[in-house]
Image (cartoon, rainbow, N blue to C red; front, side, top):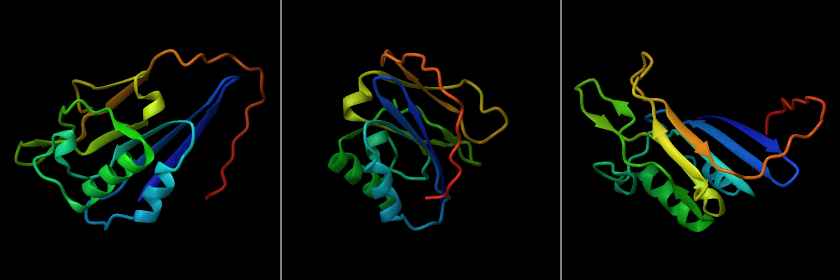
Length: 149
């Protein structure tokens, strides 16, 4: 499982974005997902989860999909996917594997969509747009934290 977490600090809030890739065949990592869904503030968790659930219009629900649904309920997240498929299988069928979860206190300001092109991949890129969250420019020095947590 791979994950990159970015925090964007403004005068009024912190926006946390986690981008996840969880390959097919891995058992769900409960502790990893619990850590993600415990992130505070305005949070977006997005990526290729390889999880199936009828909640996001999958044709069935698997163990990973059950875990993600449970964590959404427990930690007040919303799946903002619209049900549009994001992955084209080799047989031509489509499924929803790329998901975006947003904290409930922030979900009403977010919109989800896909590009009309796969850009050469078997996945359709997803786009999360954020409405007005009162971001103000702050004069700071660029800093990067490369520590692994």
